[in-house]
Image 1 (spheres, rainbow, N blue to C red):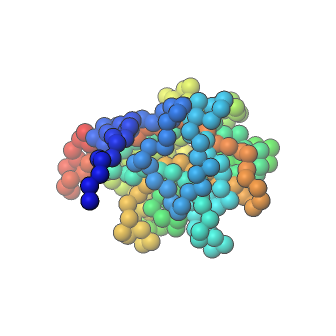
Image 2: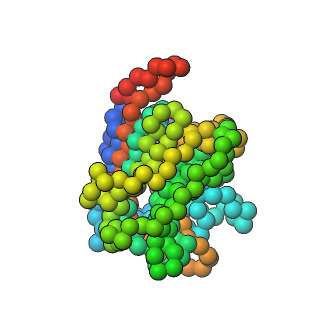
Image 3: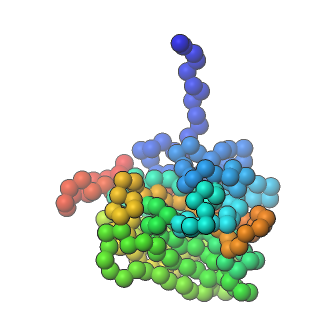
Length: 247
């Protein structure tokens, strides 16, 4: 049985180059990005009206963490695979939650029982920057969990959230105003062994973005707008003390 070859797909970046996603009007979510569980497609909108060059996420009731109340409901999370030993990932976020417990940010994700999230979280009349480590994997030390007030000058501003694998043992998380990228706040470091072994021994790490909320009911209007998605491989470890360029 024969037929026409599939049409060539538009890809913003080939696999052997740094990835930069701009979510242009009229474009689609790139096919190299993946979801966890079947997605609610209406929760992901590229360049919605009034917010060109963004990916709008609608917070889901359940976030990246495992919840025994649901093992089937969609979670709003989209990511790419970590394809390099050393890498840098960053994305800009516009997010002004009005409901306490609503959050949006970036996640290094192995499974729902092993992941690390850096997010902006709505609290009563304020917002906090939160680094949350779930699971221990092959790591036996104390876990990194940090909560700090979002600086007042950041309100109504676009924020850049970043994670970098500085070596094969350490992930470093930081945040800054998108307009002032050099003035970063170092939020915390996490041992890479958290994302190895245990529940994810046969999977690889994902790095991406998510949005979630507290409580059930209708869909949240506390949309999270992500833009300027960047992933850059910084090196591949090929031997005990040998790292070669990613590209």
